[in-house]
Amino acid sequence: MNHKTLVLLVSVCLIAACSDDGLRPPGYPVIASPNDSLLLVEIYNSTDGENWDSNSGWLTDRPLSQWDGVNIAELDSTTQISDDGYAYFQVEELVLYIQKMTGKLPDLSFSRLKRLDMHKNNLHGKLPNLELPKVEYISFDKNCFKGEIPDYDLPELLDVSFSSNKFTSMAPKSSLQALKILDISSNKLSFAALEEHMWIREKLGSNFQYSPQDTVYPVTQSPRNDGVLLRVDVKGTDIRYSWSKDGTIVVNSPDPEYVARQNGTYRCAVQSPLVPNLVIRSEKVEIIME
Image (tube, rainbow, N blue to C red; front, top):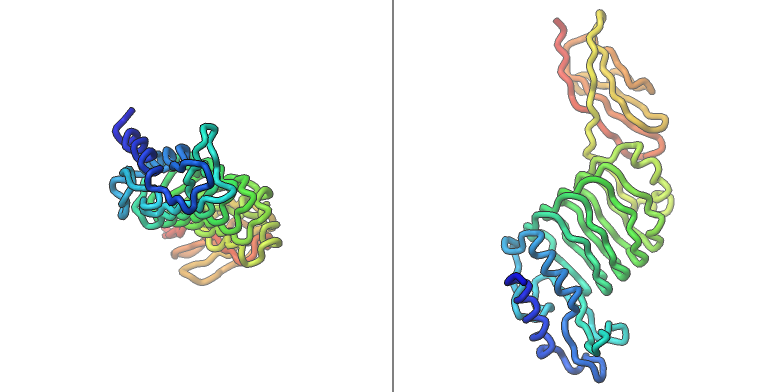
């Protein structure tokens, strides 16, 4: 048993003495939920908690409600009771935004959590598994997550933001029936990744935010006798390509190729009618004729 885990177990025991008898379910002593307590410690250890901007109370013998960013659910008829007769304090809100958290999150399982806010940190890797049956709000925006946005089973989720990360794909969101707001903007999602999710736009309207994207399409160059053949390969339906030279559009067509015949800086702006209000641009290429 390491020192931090020992501190936690001492904390769990002391919290019982700090409980509010007026909120206590009749006949039950009250302690912190072992699951929630251990998971908070795992979050702390996995994300460099010692160097957070504000970590007051964490891994001390103070009640969980005095750990910065942790709010506890009221004790009521839905409070979890253990097999040995203890009522549990459980985490209801975990608000750790702009904390300088860094590292990978562990899988999260809080049975009464309603709000999870970790935006504007330095969390990276893939998103963790989430078992949060009561969660209503999640914010993971402005981190460094990558890979796929999973299809979580979160039946009470209303508002979620995955914006400003590095996601390249997205699983279907058919299980999020209560969802009202979804923000996946400022990632690295392609038209092909977005097209199959436009049904979400029909459901949420402007509350489905997917533009802009930070995707940058590469340009291949093939010298020819009459110039340089530029090409952008984009997967999608009815893609349109607008090639520009030195910032001025020179052609707008369904053809992904363009022959540059003059010196200048070329770039392609790509659009799809199936993904309205989104333009994804290619890299800039400098052409110098010999």
